[in-house]
Image (tube, rainbow, N blue to C red; front, side):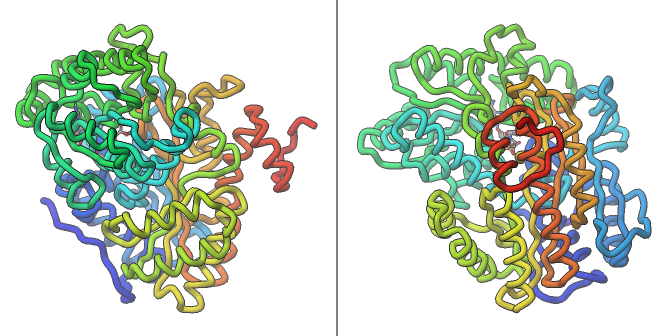
Length: 550
Ligand code: NAD
C-alpha cells in the first residue's frame, strides 16, 4: 500500500483542535512530493529518514490525531502510534521516540535487522518529528556557514571562488543556493539526475552539466567574471573529485553532502549506476557497504588532497571522515567539521534554526511574519539580509515556511508576536513553530554538533535528553528524542521541539516557556563546557546556572 499525500491547507480542520490539526498537517507536509525525497516509501530526506514506520502506521497516526482530545497525549515509538494517555491541556499532544537503541546495540547492522522486521524506523532529525520544511530549512544554516567561512578566509565574500561539493539531496540541495547567495560559484557533483532536475525546478540550482569539461568551463568563466553560478554535474564524487584534483583547475573550498552517514542507503559506490547499486544493495548488503566505504575512503583522500593544495576543506556533518578513518585513512580527521569551524559561537548564544510554518497554506501569512521580524530585530543586519534574499529566492515547498536563526530571548519574543498576529487575525490561521534537531542545546554528536568541545564532553548524551525533558515540562506541542540523525547509528542523540501558536492564552504561556527553555539549554550546555560567549550570555540574560563560576 502507498498513498499520495499532499500538504493540507485552508481554515477547515478535521481534528478536535488546532494543535492536533497542526501535527496532522505537518505529517502530511513532510510527505508532500514538493517536500519529500521519496514520499511513496515515506522517506522525507537524509538517506532513509522517514515520517512514519509504514503506511499502516501512517493511517493509524492520522486516525488517532483526528480523535485526539485536547487533554490527551499520543505516544509514537519509531514511527508507530503505541498509546494515548490522558494528560492535561498544557502537556504535549504527541511524544515521539525514534530509532533509539541501547548503546551496545547502536549500530546500522542491528538497526537494519530491526527495520527489516518492522520494529523500527530511521527518523533522521526532522523527518520522524514532522517539522521538515524542504531545503529552505537548511538554506539559512548553509548560508551562515559559507558566510562565516568567507569571513574567516576571503574578506567576507565568495565572489570569484569555486566551492566543490557533492550531493544535491534534501539538505545538500541547499548548497548551490547558499554559495551563490554568498557570491560564489558552486560545482556540485550528484550521481542521480532526478535530484539535479529537482534543484533546477525549485531554483536552488542554476545549470546542469553532463561532463567535467563542460562543468569546469562554466565554473571557470563565472569565477573569472566574478559572477555567482551553481552547476550540477552528473557523476560520482568518488570518481570525479580525484579527477579534478589531478588537473590544474583551482578549487577554493571543498565539502560534501552525500548521505555518507548511511553506507548502505546513502552513498553510491564508484562504477555503479543507480540501478546496479539498488540491485547489489538488495542482493548483498555487506558487499555494498564494503564497496561504498571504499569509495568514501577515496573521496576523503581527494578532499585531503585539495587541502594540501591550499583549499579550505571541511566536513559538512555526514560522518564521511569516520567511514574513511575506519577504512584506514588515518588522517581523515585532518579537516574540521563545520560546527567547531563556523557555527559554535552562534550556539553559545542559543542561536539556531528557529523556523515557523503557516498552517493556512497562504504565503501572505509568512510575509506578515517576515515584516514582524524586521520590526522586532531592526539591528540584526545578517537577519535582514537573509530575509531580503529569502523573500526573493526561496521557493516554498509544501506549506509556506520561514527559517531564521534566532537566539535566547529572541525566539520567545518572536513566538509571542506570532501568537498575537494569529489572535488578531493578521495571520489567517495558527502557525507551527519548531526547529531542526541540529540546534544549540539539543544534540550530542561527537563528529558534528559537539565535535571538539572545550572540556572534552563531546559524547555526553545527557544534554539532549534534558532538552527533551524540559521542553516537555514546559509544554511543547510535540517533543521528540531521536538517535543516529545526521551522522548515523551510534554517533548521535538529539531532541526535537515543536510548539503551536494558535492565538490563545494557553498557547502564549506555553510559547513563552518552551521558547525560553529550548534555546536556554544551548546557553547552559555551552556555559557548562566553559565557552566564554555562553557564560557571558547566561550572565547578561539571567539564565540561572547554579554552579556557574564567578
Ligand atoms: P539525501 O539522501 O537526500 O541526499 C544525498 C544525495 O547524495 C543524493 O541525492 C544522492 O544521489 C547523492 N549521492 C550519493 N552518493 C553519491 C556519490 N557517490 N556521488 C555523488 N552523489 C552521491 O540526504 P540529504 O538530506 O541531502 O543529507 C545529506 C547529508 O548531510 C546526510 O548525511 C545528512 O545527515 C547530512 N546533514 C547535513 C546537515 C547540515 O547542516 N549540513 C544537516 C543534516 C544532515
